[in-house]
Image (tube, rainbow, N blue to C red):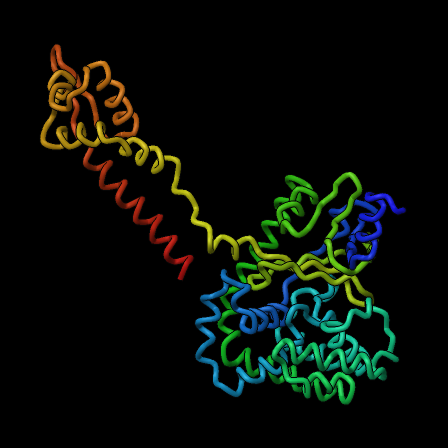
Length: 385
């Protein structure tokens, strides 16, 4: 009879589990590169349009794309297997290529050979583990699986058939889709995004120089497990693969405004090992920054009924603590604590007049508070818009 613990081990062993592991063989800071890609970003934004309910942070983009002409929207849907949930690995930017333009990246895509194109598109629906096995393109069971998968995704199975029938024709049609989409909607979006992605890369370099690679990697995504003791990045996926990272095989980190809530990885040759991760600014859209400490200090001073009543009486004219205490209904000692908080926040100013200490309203401070608060609210509104 099998012991209960052994039965559990057997069950777990049968499950489709695995890990993608990026393992640094030498200095991590010399083994990573940063890039961003207009084509990758455009393709990821197409995924957002085909699966909008999974991308709440990008709903503003989904709404703005409602004006796309119907024919273009149909073509986006027909190719949805090419970016839902994965994207072709041949799109991943190379660390040696620099920061290419949209048109340069499309020309590079068009120049790929037919087998590379076919296996790259196939990879989005059939995990061939990066093995360049051309016989997959001749197997009926693979083709049937691809048709079924494309249909389930709401894509056009006839377009998916081109993987097997004419990958070159498929690539041309895909490139035309990207160009049409770029002209209709994404060029202006990229013009706004590129400086922010460039800033993200610059800030990443500063953080790595200050805190080290592992500290920076830890903040990329909760889906990535960073293990400094083993010099590893791990991702729990039904795909077992360990990739050795070194200066000759650099890990490319690609910030994206459209990838959240996912991360996209490539671990298969001949393409560079890559992690596409959410750019920090894309997450800030849903997270209001706190106002400055000074504004918070003033708001906390105002957040009390006793202090507000004291402030209202002082606004009518200077008052001493002896006058205010009976009007508010509090002891003079108790009132003194509240007045000190108001004075520390700069809302009232104390001056001595003989025996008495008189408190007057700092109207300029109140007006500046209003400006600071409105500036914070306006900044928040701009980010949401």
